[in-house]
Length: 468
Image: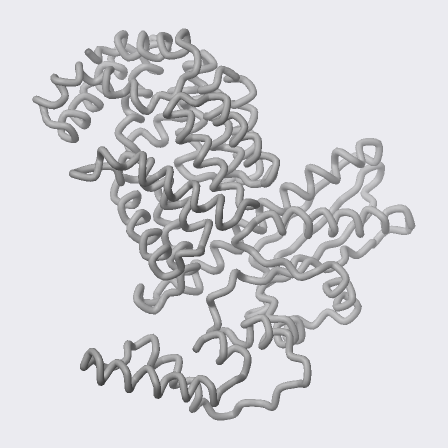
C-alpha cells in the first residue's frame, strides 16, 4: 500500500485496503491496524496537485514528507570556486565528487547522482530539489585562496526547513593539495553522516514506536546504543529486533542485532548459551543481504576473532575497512580488533582517526581507545579513556582496574576490582562464578587476544588490581 501510494496509484490503494479490511473481518474478526488506517486516510487528503508526466519522487517512493521507508536522500552540489585561480575549479569538482563517492558507501544513506546534482547547482532552489527528487539534505561548499593556503567552507542544509544543520571550515597548503583533499573530504563525509542521522532521529523522536518503519526503528536503536549505559544496550537490542521483524531484508539492522547479541547486555538469562550462534546468524545474514555493508563484515570478524579463527577474522576486518574507510565506527571497532590481533599501535591509530572524524565521539569510542591503549602499554592513557566509559559494559571496570594497577594507582585499582567482581557475581551468581574459576576466568572469554603474551599481559594487570 505504501509503495502504491508513493507511486500515485490511489485507486489500487483503496482497493487493497478494502480487500484487507474484508479479509481481516471475515477471517480474524479484527479491525485494520492504525498503520493501515493511517495509510488509507491519505487518500482523502485535499489540495493534491496534479503530478508531472515524470515525477522522480513518486517513482522512487519519495513523494512526500510522510514517506519514510527509504533512507534519506542527500545531494552534493558542485562547490563554488571563489578565487581567481582557475586551477581551484578542478579542486572544487574533485572535492564534491569525492564526497559523493564516499557518502555512497554508507548503506543507510541515498545519494543523488553527480550529473543530476550538478545540473541542479546552476539554479539552487531547495524546495525544487525536494519536490523533483525527494532530496532531504544538501551539501554545498566553497573553495578560496587564503594567502598561500586553501580554504574550503562547507554547509549541510535541510531541504525541509532550509536550516544549516552543520558547517565547518578546512584549511591546507597548496603544496599538500592531494593529502588536504583526501582529509577534507573524509572529514566532511563523516560529519554529514553523523549529522543526517541526528536530524532524522530528531524528526521521529516523538513518533510512537508502532508507527515507525524499519529504518526509523534502526535509528532509534542506534541512538540508544550510543548512550553507552547498560539499560540503553537492552533497549537498542529490542529496537533492532523490531526493525528486523518489520523488514527481514534490512542488512544494517541485522548487523546491529548481531552486535546486540554479542554485547553483554543482550546475552543474559536462558538464551546466554545461544548468544554467539544468534550473533553469527545475524552477521552472516547482513552480509548475504548487502555484501557492500561494512558493518556485517565487521561484526563477522569480531565474532570469528572471539572464536579464535584469527586469519578469517582479519580478512573480514580488512574488508570492512575497504568498504567504509571514512566511517568513524568502522575505524574505531577495527582499531580494537587490530590490537587484539597483535597490532596495538596500528589499532590505536585507527581509533584516534575515528575520534578526529567525529569529535563528539560516543562513550563507546572512549572504551575502545582505553582498551587499545592498555594493550599498547600506555596505562595512563588507558585510565583516562576508560574512566569515561567505566560502566558501559560489565568488562570495562575490570579493564580500568588493570590499567589503574599498571599505572601505579593502587587504591583506585582495588576499588574498580571490587566493583568488577560484584558486577560479575551478580550476573552469574556466586556458585556459577566459583564453578568457572572466578572473575579472571570469565573475563578471559570476551578477551579476543591472538597472542598468548597479550592475554598474559591483560591477566597480570587484573591480578595486580586484586581480581582473583
